[in-house]
Length: 315
Image (cartoon, rainbow, N blue to C red; front, top):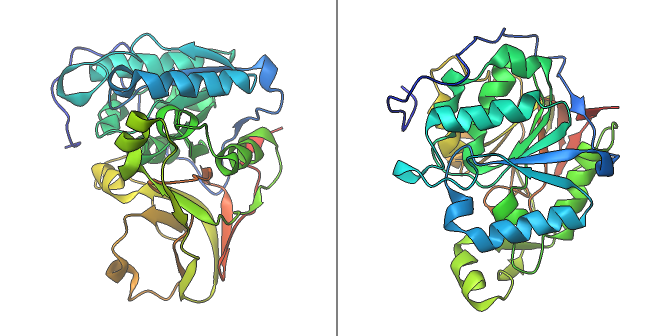
């Protein structure tokens, strides 16, 4: 049973099981290099953040429009339904499917996380999504969608900045976040080494920043720490671990073996007995600046470096 799932009206798109593909060959979306010719859809597949937090949502839209992107809002993005969501599972599914099949849309950016995106997985037409590869970016609870879509379609999706917490941050998005996002989704070449940052920001200061208008408190970043040395390579799988648990034991659970797993909120004793390299304090998670992690691309762990070895988008 998917966490938070309740009986819903008949979905607009009946579930069609996706084929389980050879995930050693990732399926790519078109790059965003020519951003002026692309439209971006904003969706809220989980929490009703745009309705609850309209100011940072508007700031996020403005930041992307300033960067030259054309912004489109899906019908239910401002919804505020029962139980902390932006609409029924059918309504949220309808928004996401419509964005995937729109030929003018190059990217789908999630408003924020939440706790209910897994409800969409039984309702999504995975074959139709596979036939219309489109950049999907979001973090936190969007993990459930990332893992389910990648498992069913082989599509490279992106654990990365969302509209409200990153693009809509007080004082504007971090240059680190913007630069890495554009490097990963904007060019059909390997993004290379994940850049280090010297500061970090914690979202538990979010309310203070919104009230005062001052940017979130910055503290010196923890240096990356090698807990078990070595070198390893495999397809990247990024996740917020509590959200990844929502698809465990379901058809949408990815295979964790043979991968470079980038999990935050990980209890370290779970990796104590392995023979693989372990690296801690890597940028990302629920701190900023947030890199963009392309799920499914070949990635190498080497000492304190995380190296993205394959292009994440098509030319």
